[in-house]
Length: 159
Image 1 (cartoon, rainbow, N blue to C red):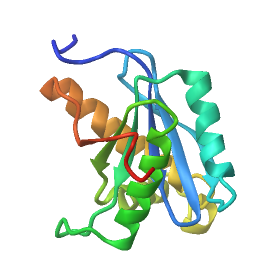
Image 2 (cartoon, helix red, strand yellow):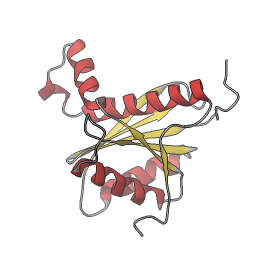
Image 3 (cartoon, helix red, strand yellow):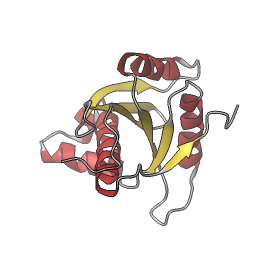
């Protein structure tokens, strides 16, 4: 069952954090998101290079980056950080969309507790789980509505 507007192909999901970046991917049918890697944030650009390697390997249709907003929907310093990182990814040449990620990290922590993992034991994978949640929500929304959620990031922004 596919919706008329749904596009088949791999997508990459990104959860941008201050210390780590969670990476997830979808299957080729765009149905299921799975964890890929947690990348350490780095000022030397090695974090962006790691994302670039996943883009080169997977050749995704697009990259979905979580947009952290406050519960009231306001922008925060984390919002600006995620937007800046999304703009840097967009300059690599693959289309990027910013998708509201409110509560994705909270949901990820709840999921990890649900399988018996403490916050301390989950530190290495929690960002991947958040990326999976962000990407799965985007996939489900696109399949249901027939249009991709969120806002596109222009490659020339921030250049």
